[in-house]
Length: 247
Ligand SMILES: [Fe+2]
Image (cartoon, rainbow, N blue to C red; front, side, top):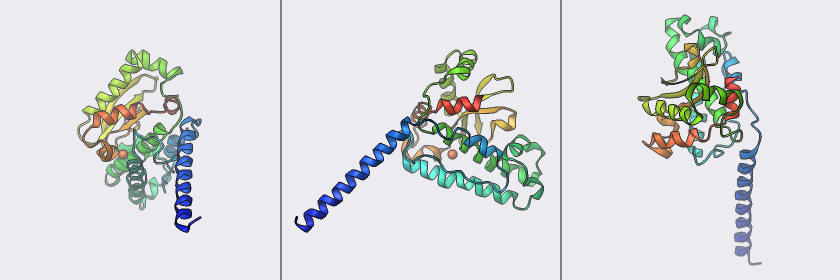
């Protein structure tokens, strides 16, 4: 075979194999059982020095809802920065270094003035994003079932009404924040928008589903079309993960 033809054939075959392999990997991930159901709880159990867990799936695993570039920047840069800044804030706060992230967020009001806002923003950012990655994990049920589905029907009338409430909260959140489905101590569900990186835990609630509506979560792909982003992400939620958060 002529050298140029050989090279073209070999390179072409390698590229085809790489594409096929990537597609196979994505197909496998999309149908795999949900493998990291407790990463959000694990992060709430962390204490200083806090660590960014790996995303746990490929950056392009939930395309087209979330594009690979946004996923990569969101996890590797934005979430990483919350972790770095939280660690910086507690570097000299030896009395707080043994507290778990859950204790810091639920006890925010008891923290010293000089560190409270930084923990609220960056501790909240760490906890909220850990939950978000878990909720976007490929695989898992695409609609709620079991006890969570029953609670949703009881408190909203239907799953459709619950999702509509989450979308309305996400659209209505002025500036940066999150749309939250959360439960109280008795299991009653509510939907609320919270600003910035505020955690439902600080209000004594337990987060069940959180949708990030900061522009960094969608602007590269959706620009100002937050409503399209919300539709796509709400259709992507891994309800097996949400059921674990609810239970
Ligand atoms: Fe975010």
